[in-house]
Image (tube, rainbow, N blue to C red; front, top):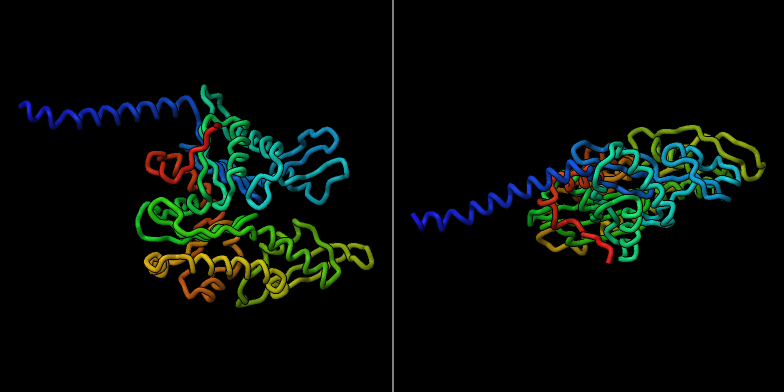
Amino acid sequence: MSDTNIIMAPAEELDLEQTTQRREMSWFSFLSNDIGIDLGTANTLIYVRGASIVLNEPSVVALEKETGKILAVGISAKEMIGRTPDSISAIRPLKDGVIADFDITETMLSYFIKRVIKHRYLMKPRIIISVPSGITEVEKRAVRDSAENAGAREVFLIPEPMAAAIGVGLPVDQPSGSMVIDIGGGTSEIAVIALNDIVSNTSIRVAGDELDEAIILYYKKNYNLLIGERTAEEIKLKIGSAYPLDKEESMEIKGRDLVAGVPKTMEVTSSQIREAIAEPVDAIIDGVRLSLEQTAPELASDILERGIILTGGGALLHGLDKRLRQETNLPVIVADDPLTCVARGTGKCLENMQQYSKVLLKSRRN
């Protein structure tokens, strides 16, 4: 009888400890509302624990230059890009996936957090924020400080490719390798993941923004036509491609004739856009090749079996999967709803912090 008691006691203590932890988590859940943030160069997405993705807005802030007063944030601010008078500036506070303007980023985060947490809670939220895998310690500190000043109780960071892999549903804790390419607005993250860590990583600051800039430069140089950022983005989304299409497409655009100085309408084709964005697309492909060269043979065989998973807004570029397949001879799969993969990954981590604790980077103020 005494032997049985000795054997059972540790298990009983363990059950009691787990029950206490669950009660504490439930109590904290009642007191606060934790959120996951995909803080992107182009868009910010927020996942609220127990709900889903509740916010998807452009990472843009419009303010008065003289007073610094915030006039608009998100969609309404993006609509002002290229249309503001000298007294107003529409700013994108993140560049190449990291914070370029600390104060504006803090203001933007605070605005978004207040929008998604509508009820008053007794405790500030815990926040998980995705960051580029190639981010420096100084840049990590800037993200953490911005989140804390915007109202976070505790901040955790997670590399974007890891969050994307979790969002897609890949078994990141297994010894077999998974390759993820997350192409956002400012960075392209190419990572091989196994055993809750990034085994091989290539982070290049060439992504959606560079594709837009390449389109603007192409028409300025070859056709003396000046177009804006929003027009370039629209062209890329509608007829942009990285691989010849079965049926080439065209669309009409408006810009300013640099010779005559007057507004001009012009028809552009998908083949022109493919030529325009060839250089940044090649840079992304070179990054993929570099990452594959650094991958261990055992992991490379796993990738051959599972394929490469494409996530992020850049995954929506027509024919990019076919181009990568041609260049690498590997299967390439575009994730379902690639724009939200990273945000969904932060959400899964929030819902089960214990399971994903090894992939989170705890960030405390020293």
